[in-house]
Length: 197
Image (tube, rainbow, N blue to C red; front, side, top):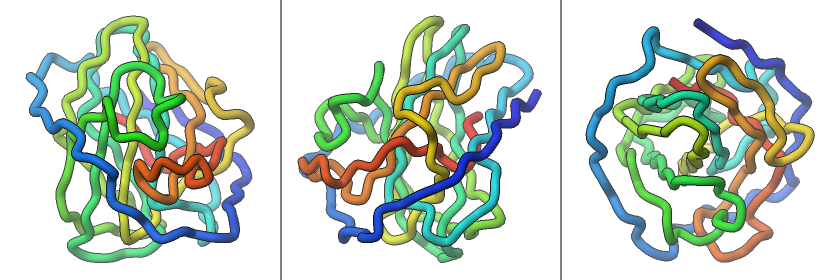
């Protein structure tokens, strides 16, 4: 069943630094698929008014599992439509706090060129298959080096934004340069505009 989340007003810094490549090569894995909760849980995020300036090349957040769950896909909106654009999804166990600017401990779970569909239609990044056990946190980082990923602003980083029977979603951060080593490239609080499945 769907759990709808109220949108919040958004704000971005006026400057958008050039996207940088990760400082090191995170581990890539192909996790073993475990059964998902049934029915499939889709958690829409930040479904409010879209404004052109509300986005960054990266979005980082964490969730808490209220039962054993499998995160299979994340859908995102992009600042503009564009074909054959590279996009990556990283994950790490626990909370991302303290690990925003360093690639150590992050695992690449999705890396492909996709057709980004713009501000009205989301693109689904599927095949993630990340199992999160009951009571534990899992962090995600979505990186699109050329086209910004859309988000809303929140009220406080790490505050609980929404929850349902299976999942809690916490306000995260926007990132303008991936794993750059510079805290100035991280802006919070931010709420990804899209959905988690």
